[in-house]
Amino acid sequence: MINCVLLPSTGSHSLDCFKCVSVGGDNQPCEDPFHNNYTKDILEAPCWAGRKQRDGVFPATACIKLSGIYEDSGETMIVRGCALDSGTLTIDTEIVRMSHCGGFYFDNRYVSGCLQSCSEDACNRSTSVYSLNWLWILTLFISMKYIQ
Image (cartoon, rainbow, N blue to C red; front, side):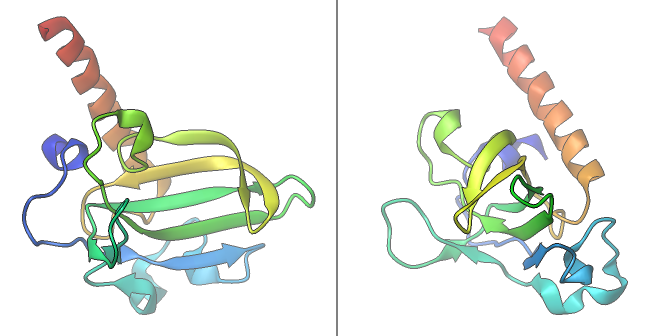
């Protein structure tokens, strides 16, 4: 499981990911808490994503969830989708390799929030999945530091 999160996929298997946008709760199936009862319409199977410096789309290697609060209104936003590890050497340039929290612009509005990723089919459904993945990744990085 950890290798799938950290290494780019070499096969042609693509993940199934939930793909939706909700601003201010306008798309309830996309909101948290996330329930699979009404979400088959927003599951993209397989999910395809763009790759840095390449044209076209490729099989996704991670599902992502972007969530936050617009600073100007206090309105919530959630975006669920998929992404692809482009194979660069540094972890900070790959959106799928680490969690990012802080401020960013979405639709020309400032948001405080987090981007989280996971690497199992339909795993961008709830926050609890991310916590477990990131705990394993952190443990792996600490272990790798001491092994080298």
